[in-house]
Length: 523
Image (tube, rainbow, N blue to C red; front, side, top):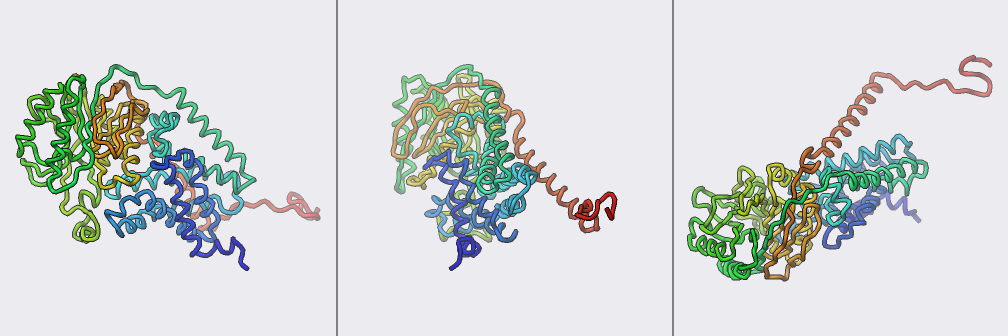
């Protein structure tokens, strides 16, 4: 009868186990939100890759684990993209193959302390590079970065203000590597414990020394969430409901009213009646209204998703056209090759057009607003740029109505906490159908969420902060550090291979025997 180790060598068992191990970290994200699991969730995957019989097998374990992670993280896309979700997960999962190869390279067998110390730097760096590559908008963007699982942990949010979500991902993987070493390599427990202590020290230092946002006022912001509206005339009926809900805000002293993504289904220049009705709402409430138009523009060809500010006299002229579109949802990459995706799922029948630059809007009352649309809130560089340009308030307009009963709405809402903490700016996440949420400049939650069952308004007293966080000032320095670590590794390995190829064998001192000395042969 074969032992478990022998069975584990079978690819028929290792593949599914690796996929399950890769999927485990997803439980640290909403909706389960077992944030504490992120500190050990990668350990089974590490142990499996470490014990791979060959480097090639380790790389395959990385691919299977990456597939499991991407499929579990994006499982809510299955009703929309069907089999194409599996194809995307398979392609992106391959990014983890080199990472798992490095796991075996540094941790296989009984690694020396030097290899363990190197692994504590190299493996988190390699993971960060995987997140960097898949953060490219054309590959789906940075949804599900490991560090984003810590969106409700105050010390982690403080670390995010220093190095962004990148620093959180790096430290989480380092902790997982240290735990895996403690479990599997008894001789190397000292550097593993040292890594855990160093991580705790970094978190403590960030808590004590990182600059805190300086509050210099408040703004009263209202979110209008109409709820789910279906049917052929849903656009008109949604606007009617948004209009009714917005009128309820009269007399509440709000400074800004935010509607969700695609809250207006026609270009306001083509529908002056909608522009007049929105302006009347602005006069009745005493606040500018940030709407989102999903329609063909009257002044240029194509469909745009645009944040448009409307004041008492109509559109103010401030407009932001969405720059980073959702692959397949808002455009089909290489449509001539992949256009068939529209026949098996709900991929975009026509590509949306992209905006050309980010915009700061003057919403009145001295409030400078930096708008983002939909999954743009997943990109830390966009909010960082807005904060650096002088935004007082970050606003994300979203709609996850297609995924109402999934984990997507709460996952999306949680991202705003990271963006607020990174930039030291409060952030409003306003949706059509929930979850809508608001976070303060330290990433702390303000007031109640509007869930996916709500059709209502909510008013939030939002703290406005001044100052620049280290992340806004210095940018993605953890990513640069990770690239330098890997560059150093490649140079070292390349030099070592060159020496071996040229016949420069490492010097080995003569062995001492019972009959002679290495210094005085024959004695």
